[in-house]
Amino acid sequence: MSTMSLDVGALLLQTVPFAQTLGITFDSVGDGQAVSRLPDRQDLHNHVSGPHAGALFTLAESASGAAMLSALGDQLERAVPLAVSARVEYRKLAMGEVHAEARLLVAREEVVAKLDAGERPVFDVAVDIKNADGAVVSTLTVTWTLRPNDRP
Image (tube, rainbow, N blue to C red; front, side, top):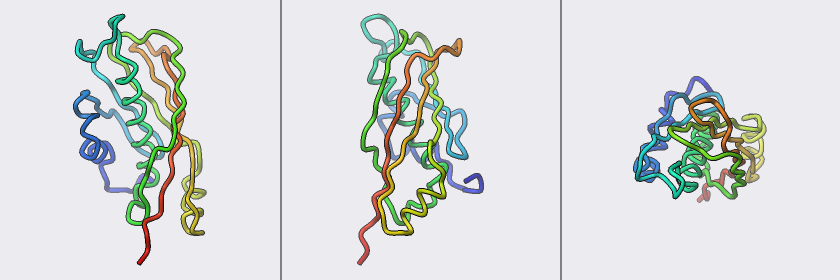
């Protein structure tokens, strides 16, 4: 939803301080997509001098959350977003600064329709993590749900 006045990247970093601790930033967020970046820092490295798998996961999960919120953030009044599972594939050794490209794999209207029907939607966000040269080093699929708020 491109007309949202919500700064999704800032909201995510405010509500998920761990992402701030890692130095994650957002290049772009909107219309069910997000690009986030992880700096190349020694304290984030693993035993082979690349970003640690935990840092890569946090980068990707943060991007997936921002992509989801960019399309569905206007539903936060009536539902809480929760990641319910994630599948990760490490394809190549990540080195240096990396970025994650996330995209919502469902139409916004489908999720909202389920909420309108009193159901709890479950949907996926795909994420590619890439090295500076554009090579995909990891892929993730994060499954999200919107848990409807309890009604009085």
